Image (cartoon, rainbow, N blue to C red; front, side, top):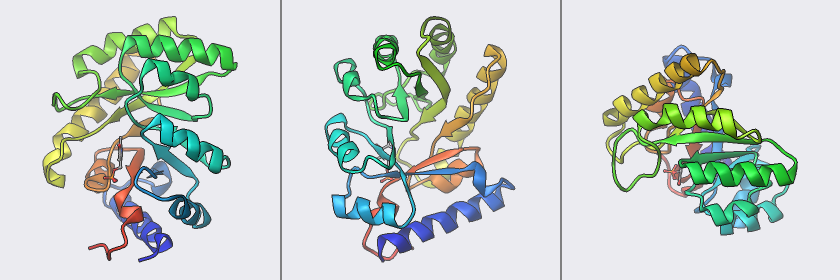
Amino acid sequence: MTIKENLENVQARIRQAASFARRAESDIQLLGVTKYASDEQVQELIDAGLTTLGENRVQNAQARLERFPDAQWHFIGRLQTNKVRFCEKFALIHSLDRWNLAQAIDSRAGQWGKIQDVLIQVNVSGEESKTGLSPSEVRSFAKRVLQECDNVRIRGLMTMAPLLEPQAVRPYFRETRLLYEDLQQELGVTWDILSMGMTNDFEVAIEEGATLVRIGSALFSEEDSV
Ligand SMILES: *Cc1c(COP(=O)(O)O)cnc(C)c1O
């Protein structure tokens, strides 16, 4: 399979999942996660038409941003506050998960003269290995960011489900979606990005309301996909 074929495959699966859930395909954005890919593969993906891409490590991302400045880059990994200074070019940071990071982004964005778009990362499974705020912490956190961080714009939520069979992750996606809706109502804001679903589970995530899926392996695998 070429990368172009992989992309067409993933797009077809997104279309199918959307149709199954009676949602418009255009409501679901595909983010190509390039952390396992070579530069040549990234170029192939861009040539095939996918130009919204994500990296999870600041160091790699730096090089990628320089090499592929015309793509739109998202940051999806754990972010240390002392690395925020390298993040000016990211269109979206998916991993806001603590107050000192919000402050660091706010102050840098002020220097950059931009409003930084972010998602709040939620840990709905409670797994220790996963970063993200617990659902009960998100409300007051979001409120504080809204009140105190003028240079940060919350666009929605991001979550990573536990590594289980696709059907077993459904409750985690559902809970995140409910939280996403409740919070908008309670806080009186309108969000537009619910980032959930990866290679292993994106169809279920779409059924449960994801508006952005983050896909790596399925795009870069050389094997025939099932
Ligand atoms: C690696 C990664 C992905 C993509 O994972 P795949 O299983 O390869 O699709 C998505 N989101 C985050 C945060 C990641 O680190």
